[in-house]
Length: 120
Ligand SMILES: [Cu+2]
Image (cartoon, rainbow, N blue to C red; front, top):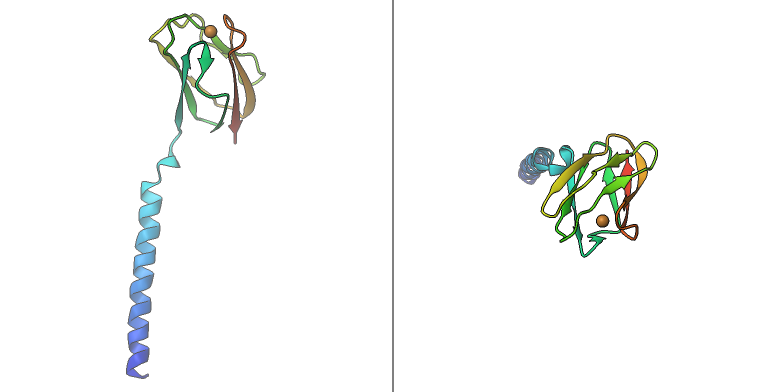
């Protein structure tokens, strides 16, 4: 084996170590490993988003940053929930344990609409 070959081997070994360390740190530090939470703010009688894509097990926190009371709900089969009377300044986390395409509305303000796609 020539001297240059041995140097190449050492370089290869070191590169492999760096790649392995980078892969390991990626596995350790990925925040998506646990369930996520998305904030949806209600202000001026509107949701902060029109549509949203989350995953099964995630939660959506509905924040009433408005000056009026809201009653956010979904009647979509498999994704039913109702926050009842949510007064200004309050927030409620809603879990989505099943996959579905939830049509979220406000019972008091029918123009407020939000589509939540809960992917597997
Ligand atoms: Cu409302």
